[in-house]
Length: 91
Image (cartoon, rainbow, N blue to C red; front, side):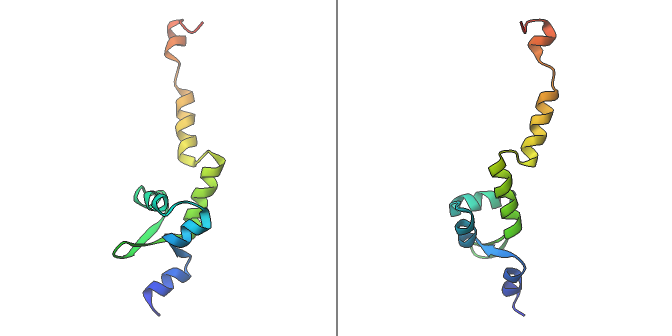
């Protein structure tokens, strides 16, 4: 069996298909790949295959506005004491 064909059969799609599926621009898909936000494999000169489930998970998290990393950062931020309140300047 051809390696590229087996990758596509296992839930991998091209960046063109990823853009069509999500409505994202291809440039944004590439940004997500390069930032490690979605799983992808480079299979040729400038040709990337995107893991479809990874992409859909990212899109779902982006639509809720609360991706896991953002939620964790927000939780840490709210745990910090307010400097003004600690000095009695908050009122």
